[in-house]
Image (cartoon, rainbow, N blue to C red; front, top):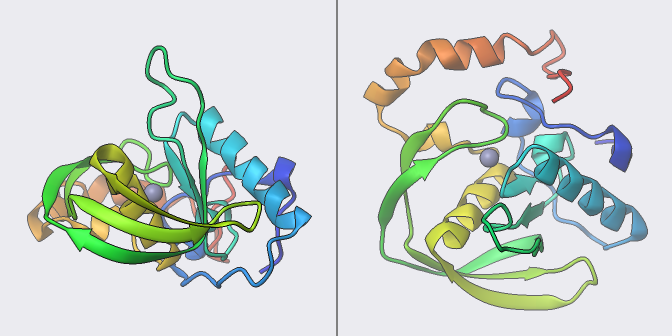
Length: 185
Ligand code: ZN
């Protein structure tokens, strides 16, 4: 897939085909990769999100960014970049409400592992491993799912899905016949 320039990227909404593709591993972390990441962070902060995956901006690569607490009073921005992430461990299970920049206005309870250990590369090509729980651990699992073409609404009950059917249809209706959502958010 052609990479988008940092100033041209925007969040794709439900219905966009890029949200349903399995993303490709990043073979080399280049200036282009870093420019994409910096654009993704801009988009995430502008939209008041705490996480964003490359497929959400139409780029099918295994990259996501997370900053779980930046919007809290007294907190500084502290972005975490994950390139080619891999889970090493899952522990426990916990349910909490989630939202997604690709599904504005939709919030549903989702089961996730309570704690994860993940290995990835950062934008400087340094390999790191981290353990995360709480909101950070949840965000990592949510963003990782985007790399697999999975959305959090795939993990909710059938009954809840019936409840939000209209909302989902309305979002999907903003997609054009090429399966692209071109609404600038
Ligand atoms: Zn999401």
